[in-house]
Image 1: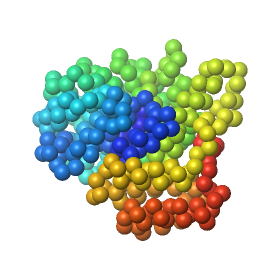
Image 2: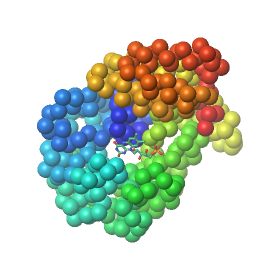
Image 3: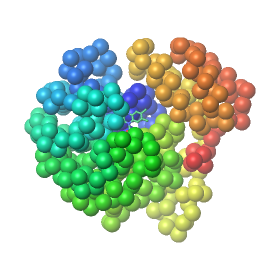
Length: 336
Ligand SMILES: Cc1cc2nc3c(=O)[nH]c(=O)nc-3n(C[C@H](O)[C@H](O)[C@H](O)COP(=O)(O)O)c2cc1C
């Protein structure tokens, strides 16, 4: 599954990922419940469910149960796979309002909010959360059981505390343990760095003795939008030929990728599917990760960050490959 990422998990990124073969579910970037019910000027871009509505999960963020329920009612009318509630965001601008991971500090309030949202939608209702504000697994299990009893059907755990943000490693053993403790599916998220990681994690979720039910990828899917296709190809080869123990490390996964072409295609998609007000911020966000594929990535990032319009980025990007043609192609999994 593609993780919800503000200013990144939008239609252009989904189009790019689909072009390589796609993933199973696309979570949108968090959508403010208040802005959605207030009919903000950009809401149609946040709720764009293309290119695969059947795989789309809308993520809502908010602190007010009534607003979240009203926003879920609006989303419920759109074609989608499900609705997710953000209980994991630890950005101060979000937690200050009582939203994101702040929900985890008050199980009664969180359970009552979920009951209210549950009452208005038959879509799959899920929650994405962290371990909690503190590192307390028993608290996490009790909290999640409350959500489960109110009708949550899937939990995605990013196994860090709210205070840790992106520090320390994601503690996947918590994902295993939560899966064992709950009756509903549990997915894991955090620190998948590349195709081999994804193949390894996904393997834990697809056998009879599954230790969890799904894997969600965030930043690595921006660096390598082909990661899901590459992982599926490698996994398929291992399933077809179990003796090939080292298949994951020896396979190319997907065909060589033309990085210049992917970057230009992203810019076209951005111009096509996002409003001009979003172009520069979204382009910077994307290239901030995508440039990690390049030998002189930091240099290119700096150049792109100076541009103030998509047209400038569309000139600077190919200019780099004229200087460094050797950087144009990459073999997908070998990078990481
Ligand atoms: C730029 C950025 C924006 C994010 N926005 C959201 C968001 O809108 N909702 C959410 O639940 N998590 C958000 N996250 C967290 C990711 O969904 C994910 O939990 C985190 O990046 C760890 O996964 P990764 O190591 O695969 O990137 C964001 C992360 C990043 C880097």
